[in-house]
Amino acid sequence: MVGLIIGLLVVGVAMGALIVARGVTGTVNDASDIQQQAAYAMRVIGQQLRQAGSLYLEPNTASASGSEVYMTPVSFEEKDFDSIKGTQSPLSFTSRYRRYKEAVHTGAAEQSLVRNCIGAPADDKPDRLIESAFSFSDNELRCGGNSAPAQPIISRVADFQVRYLQQNSTTDPGNVTIRYIDADNISATSAWDDVQALEVCMVLYGEEAIDMPAGSTYTGCDGTEVNMSTLTGPRARRMHIMFRNVFQLRSQGLIKEPT
View 1 (tube, rainbow, N blue to C red):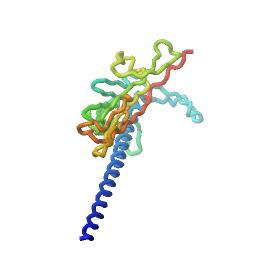
View 2 (cartoon, rainbow, N blue to C red; view 1 turned 180 degrees about the horizontal axis):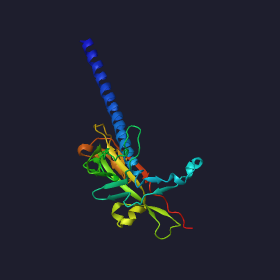
View 3 (cartoon, rainbow, N blue to C red; view 1 turned 45 degrees about the horizontal axis):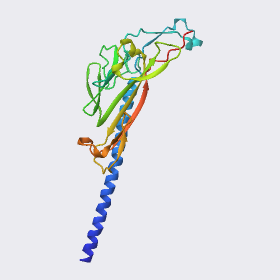
């Protein structure tokens, strides 16, 4: 009887330790998964935004000597499209840049090696631009473009916000300033050309419920603290982490002081 009692006590202690270890492992795995999702989303967004507005360069090699290849003159195509455009409600933004073909060593015909956020368009498509349209709804960050339907990139997104960094150069081009602005306040068509960068902020939450001490908080995209222990629904007792990044558009640059 004494041996049985001692055995039960050992099993009980072992089960308690196993439950604690399982909870710690789940929390670590949740944090790792959230960070991986955020890193993937930021990488996809950044890849498209850093190309936004880029054009094909047409080199004119006729007037360049062999010893001065770096002096080869080039010409830009005329830009007749918006590098970036977005809406505030529903929240979305679309980046655009020139699609062009070039010679590749794997085939005789020239091919286009650039793709949008979901790997479109195909080589046989006649699309002139690469478009990546990002949107947020139903706790999912989605992306589509070039006639391809939007599909989820990441899930369990509690909040997703975008602010545009717009150059104010209308009154004094020699004294350029940058301001934060949302899509609703960029009303004029020409104003989108003054956008230099985008600030992207997202809050992701975990998949597994954890022991949440009362008063546990995280800081949201708007700078306010949110009490995680009071959340309900699929976000109840879930870990929340906020991520923020700024991406500069490739095509834009500060206006120089006039000479």
